[in-house]
Image 1 (cartoon, one colour):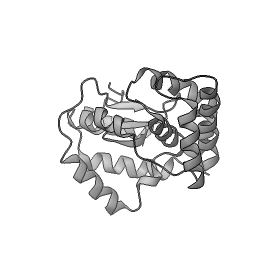
Image 2 (spheres, helix red, strand yellow; image 1 turned 60 degrees about the vertical axis):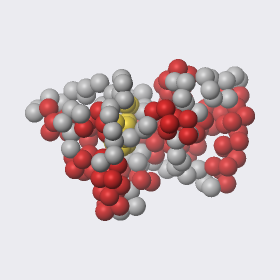
Image 3 (cartoon, helix red, strand yellow; image 1 turned 90 degrees about the vertical axis):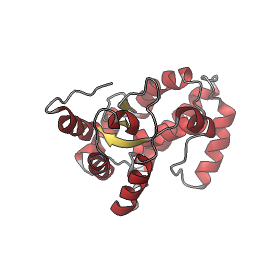
Length: 200
């Protein structure tokens, strides 16, 4: 197990992750249970599932890059997924509009997918923690019955990665890559000529 894999267990603990994410999910009217599942999966497992091979990852990014459209209002460059901020979503439109290049993102994404990993137990623990909390009462558009229905389906498939909900896709038009904070800072050094602070 490498150092970054250790970081998952030390700073992105299941209860801390749900403490961090649940208030965000409550206030986003477009979040559905699939989106909470996806966030949790990405936070605990990184983006390794999205890299079958380098060439496929490149084609996927280049195809998406050419059809991004205009930046969404208020869309940040970087959205941390964990309370420690060690992994997050790099929003492609916002990064592009600040001078970012697709090749730089690809390199950071591939490196992140190799470095940030955990076993499935960490994700399952966080997902179950969400279920326990929703069983006590709904949070925004999230409720226990929807959690239970999705859990039954995903458990049969050994908890794979899934797509965003249709509502979230239609409203938010998500276009991002999962990248570690260390790789994000390297990207900002490249783009900002030595400035390594994460811009919103």
